[in-house]
Figure 1 (cartoon, rainbow, N blue to C red):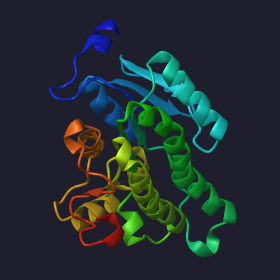
Figure 2 (cartoon, rainbow, N blue to C red):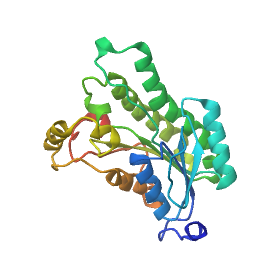
Figure 3 (cartoon, one colour):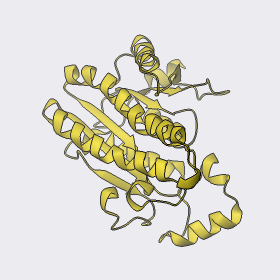
Figure 4 (cartoon, rainbow, N blue to C red):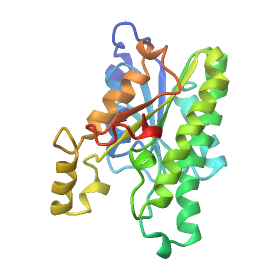
Length: 253
């Protein structure tokens, strides 16, 4: 543990504190590992404590649908590591079904977690960033936010909304040294995707121009760049990590 804390960041990237919501698995965990490997102190937030957690990562309880839980999570990170100046808002959920079968709460709960939850975490994170006059906020959107998807009206709406949120915040805080960007993953090899079955996965991979399903590390690499000093002149951007699936998709670009 001590050795992880003493690890030096990559050249040109000072050691900072990062907080990744939804960081106990999938894209969030890959991102936490990437930021930790870059030398940062990293906290991961989720509603339930993971069975195992990499040495050097700090877990805090965080339910992004609850403002008080978000505030307590940030306070815990600040006490353990210091104020985060890198935020990766990755937590979210899906409740897929066709619109005619979709209940109001199926729509509002997904939007609350994916869109409003990102707003809550960004709002809580930004004050320490303003004080430091440096910050990186990265929202995890989706190619579905630009292209739409049958059975995912709620999810697509929430992910499309992140684009407007990110670009508004980017304009508000650019003068304080804070950048706000998005990644828009395509199909990624996570537990959620694995549930659709091998035939559907094969068809999905065939639709991706590069000919494969992406990995959480593919997305984490993009997030790691946007969190770095090298990305200081990039803000309000949506970086597609989708193997070309959504090229020309408007909001996603």
